[in-house]
Image 1 (spheres, chains in turn brown, cyan):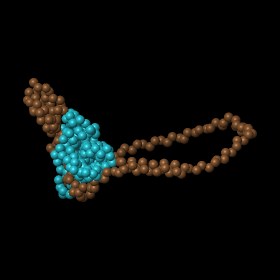
Image 2: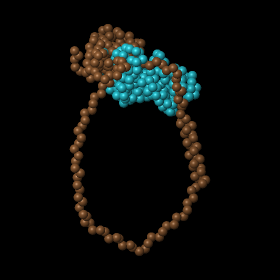
Image 3: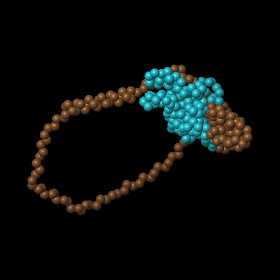
Image 4: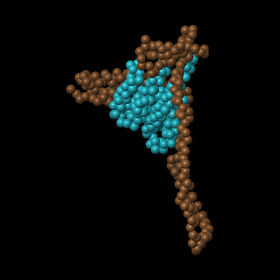
Length: 198
Length: 186
């Protein structure tokens, strides 16, 4: 029996992404190796399911006109050359026109010693700290749960009854707001439902 | 467009860097917008992300000088940004999806339930992608957009020979997460 192939190679084989020679070798191997054939079948089926799921992300139509393409920034060699030129001219200017410095007069230090000021005694009056009375904490208000519905007509909904139903043969749970006249007025799909629909 | 054409076909004819960049832009911008829109569900946001990726490419003198892997780089930057956006705006996107469903229902004058189910299913797929590792979500999106393994490898910065392994792993992870959230609703 020929050698077995890895999961990644079998996945690439499924997409026709192996070199031609390896494609034929994998094909021959799958005919004689039940474990590899089983793994390949599993990968193929999962790939098909993924394709169905990801096709739910619709691709938009092509744009009617393109925006302007970006221009390459000028920050490369030209920018560096400009920076070097500016730095060089600044250097020349500093050499030709050095900063003039004026002589600074420094005051002479006094010769007589000044006695240090007497320190106050280290006796401090104790501070009295009073704690503010604790305020009772406000009760935590429960946050209302908001569900968003899609209206099924343009009339305002004043009163209604929420009825849970199963759509698509009972597979998709949904809440329907039924008006006083018995007509369905709005609907939403239920994502977090884990019970059983009747 | 066949995946092989992502290999920067018209660029050999472009002489200056500006012409070359424009050729890359014209060839890949529409497709990049389409790929990002599928992930974010928002066309205007996708156009912003794609334009930003090309603007960043315009400032990358190394990529511009080498003229290689520019398209792969732009795909990597744009899909990275798209995954970030998807993860950050999951709640806002849900509200927008509901609003667009309402608009679609009004425009179509009916089939509100079909639109609702379609939008909800797309939101579920986006939610699962947002919960995955960014590179796995990018991988699934790019493969689903018909990019070849070689192009996916260049866009994600991995070896072409490891794309099959990564893809099988990402698909298994997506299915596990989807079934954990939504059961057997395929």
